[in-house]
Image: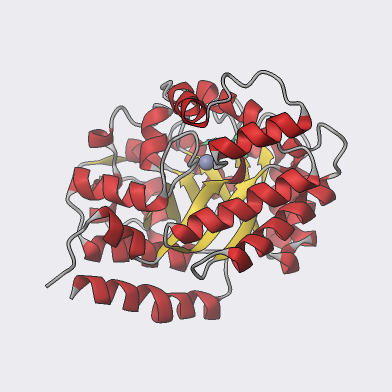
Length: 354
Ligand SMILES: O=c1[nH]cnc2c1ncn2[C@@H]1O[C@H](CO)[C@@H](O)[C@H]1O
Ligand SMILES: [Zn+2]
């Protein structure tokens, strides 16, 4: 008899998370304590429950640009090494407690330099925090880091340089984040050419606040190996007729890092019911399920799984497939991806589904 798909059973299942923002996943209580310690002004409230609700309501705007405004308060308290170590350590522990066995957590180092930290100090503090959190966590977890450049800012090459410099210290790849519309990924194409020449990995947020053309730029000009969200790839699909771009994405096994709750909040999809995850999965795309911002979306990895189970009727076999998809698309060496699937993911789901 399969184990019922209860929230506790989903939490116990081994999960792989590819798209989670460090500055979008703080505990509300931590935001309050760090704001107090560093003198960050303007938090809307100092009650943790009310603050959590404020972040969620603010993010529920239907617009990516409005959604991103809440990050002023999280980045505002992440401006010294002690704060970065704490936030990273808590993120690793919270993900482990939720049954995430491997996570790639991303952030933009340039957002942590307002009070004098260098980019290198920011990266090293976050790495220290992840190592501490992995060691302190009750369950086994491994955290890899993705460094983001911000689409609206210049200087992507500096961040690409950091990815290469810290590749043997746990930084596994690069991304661009921030407002998509009006800031094409091709704006600083040489950064991506450099990363490819360095044999480095990258994903790109695309197809969230802009359409298929943005995905086309990310894939065919920049060379993205995965797509953050990618929901608007559906503009290139009619029924089961898959256009040339979508066919390329599917044929090359370019993973779609879908974030159901966030995608509704930012207006990338009109409603959960209209989210294309089930359709794209059925068409054979490499679909994965992710959190994006656990604070702003008031969500967790097991909660996102429960949400799509409830909405679309997915079962254990589907959750296993999403997890294997994520493990295959992880920016880890092949032997580690194989071991993760063979030793952790497959036995975990087999025990739940039998
Ligand atoms: O869904 C998203 N789309 C685009 N950018 C995002 C999203 N979520 C967060 N960020 C942006 O990424 C930065 C680095 O972590 C965050 O500060 C936020 O501005
Ligand atoms: Zn994101």
